[in-house]
Length: 146
Image 1 (cartoon, rainbow, N blue to C red):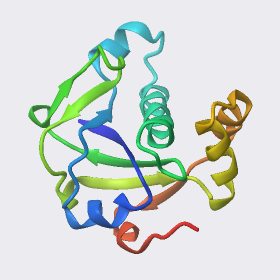
Image 2 (image 1 turned 135 degrees about the horizontal axis):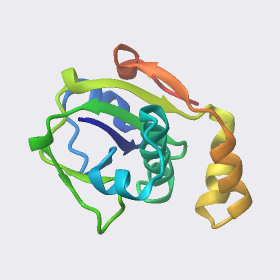
Image 3 (image 1 turned 60 degrees about the vertical axis):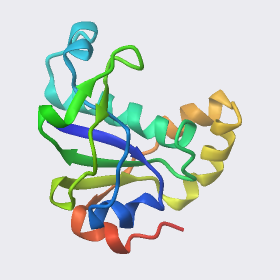
């Protein structure tokens, strides 16, 4: 099961070392499939990724949106539709071998992140219009967005 994990910039080296234990991730869950009128796998994955990106700044406190993508077994994840239709609880550490990639904002998004965290809906809309940069798992250990 592909999961999208809200993270911070400081989490990136730890997740590359297999020492990271995030409690929550987002995925294309049965509940999400029930409420979204789409059968496009890419669109559904983008929804889960975007929810994780928002959670990374609003709930996790990252200065930039950061989403780590991992491949986990269904046994390692338990759906939590009370939290969000795409939410899953993650069991234990995420092995480095399970990390597929990460999505990270460009450094110039930091102002929009601060404003969005402060409740500015326009800044949140601006963030959602920005593209996230893609990084391969091999790049995460040394990734240091400004």
